[in-house]
Length: 201
Image (cartoon, rainbow, N blue to C red; front, top):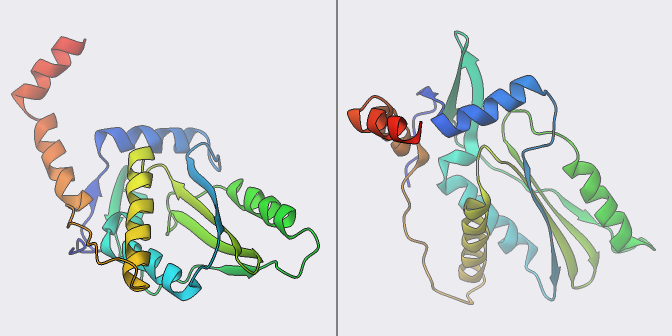
């Protein structure tokens, strides 16, 4: 999947503008932090798991999204996330490893993701015992919704199974978000939009 040109500046979509407005009104809020943590029990190939996540990030331009104002207007552009390294924390030698791990995840989840910064996600892998892990996932809602998050998790899983030789399933190529933006802009200027707007009003 080809990523869009990093120098191309796109307008925010109609829906994403609502996210931006809330962020502008209530700075440093965590309202749009999406995710949580996943408990993994059993053998885990850490290098393969990290690579599985890196592949998804590299194949979808949305993970490189940066939202900022250009001449007073909120815009978005996409830059490739190069050489992403997911943090790994080993809590296995701690007496209260599980409790300490969950507390750290909650602390990190309570920190806001700033729209003008990049990346707008934060992942980490924690090990609390020999075959016991926690994977924390925090993504700004402006990147993904609940359905998008489920697709992300599915693609990470598929990549991991491929990398460990457990499956040969492939992930279908999906359209980039930047191909949707001009389609929406065209719709908002169309007669059909005016008809739809009048109906709902």
